[in-house]
Length: 142
Image 1 (cartoon, rainbow, N blue to C red):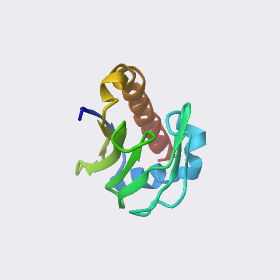
Image 2: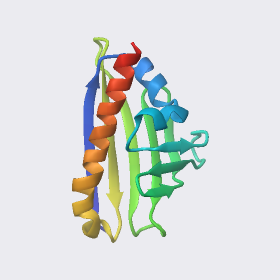
Image 3: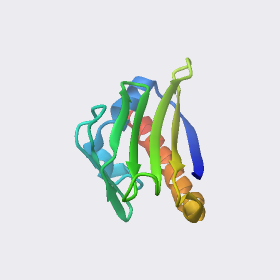
Image 4: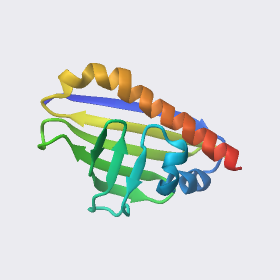
């Protein structure tokens, strides 16, 4: 089975608690997040949420939701094993009032090679754009 990982990160000038507070206000996403247009539902491990990205909606299962440090879900395209993605957001406390926000996804499945170009030209830049938008939102909120 083919696999691919995309990992991006950014340093945000705020504590993990402050970043988490802004990041998990999902109802505010339409105001600042051009990558994840909306997220509906309560993020509880084992439950599903509804996520809207440009041109697609899906209902991934929550794998981890640890306050101030990790949010992770797993989604699939049609059937498990075709094109699955484990999307993750990690917040690392740098100990100096800043946070390293890590945003990535582990892709697996038969269709990964077919989607490789799209993952590099659309998905990776989308992750990076969301990171920048989150940084701007958090830092402007003070």
